[in-house]
Amino acid sequence: MNSTSSNSTTGATLLTTWKDAQARLKAAGIDSPSIDARILLEAATGAGRVDILNDPYRAVTPEQSAQMESLLDRRLRREPVSKILGKKGFWKIMLNVTPDVLSPRPDTEVILDIVTLAFDANQSFEMADLGTGSGAILLATLAERAGARGVGTDISSEAIAVARENAANLDLNNRCTFLRTEWATGFADDSFDLVVSNPPYIPTAHIATLDPEVRDHDPHIALDGGEDGLDPYRDLAPEIKRVLRPNGIFAVEIGWDQGEQVKALFEAAGFSEVKVVKDLGDRDRVVTNGPDPRTTPRPDAA
Image 1 (cartoon, rainbow, N blue to C red):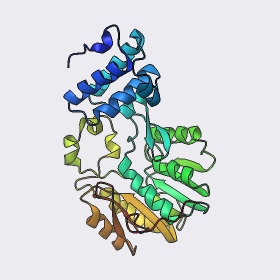
Image 2 (image 1 turned 30 degrees about the vertical axis):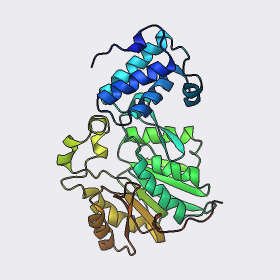
Image 3 (image 1 turned 180 degrees about the horizontal axis):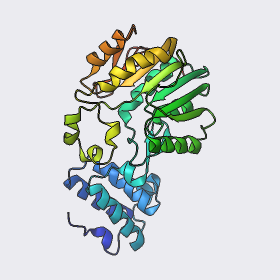
Image 4 (image 1 turned 45 degrees about the vertical axis):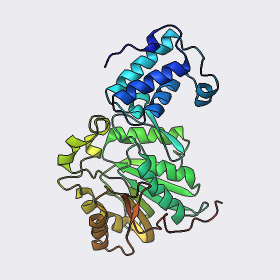
């Protein structure tokens, strides 16, 4: 890809820089070229979305153009925007992300849809996020439910450090802890009202076929679910059954073609009323014994 662009010429504006970046990303086959170009432009220039819309002819300085070119070059090499900027929005919070954690994805927010239906706004409950990574699910839940307290576990010390930093940045660290352990190892029976997890679920042989943004920039330890992608669920189902209190809720993310298999694993562990919940793309996304957001009326917000 030729690195020359209108950014490097005099007279560059927010609009011309955005349009140039958008065209280059589109030509390279990048998904969402317009959004990615805008986010990178905001980072390079300090402009906000409103500035780009209301003041499109604002001049872009040579220094800002150079910064934009550097960011754009990284995106053209298929580094995800979240890893370029070191942050990613999830649900209603902003999280730091590093090469040691998965970038949280909108599909995972289905778990939050379930949790916010299952637990009232002012309800007190204790939760565990097994394989917490950046802390996304746990921290989004705590931000949404003031009565919640929780613990996040991960086998990666680096991921635990990222999650702790995110909790502190969100001023939620007084309501959660993070422990380096495997899944729920070390917790007593009947410890939690809610257990959530987004475990690795990609079959080992499929990792090489993933988009470069995932394959080359997300930690493989957070992707690799073993030969058939189901190994983590074989461990999780009985462990979640052990640490979940009677009448407790669990919700685990799954691959789009794993619904019935994972459902069967949790039923074999002793759960009843297990269901597969679809995401906005109408693909199987979460296995849970909680409410299905697509069929359960949502009460008025408190």
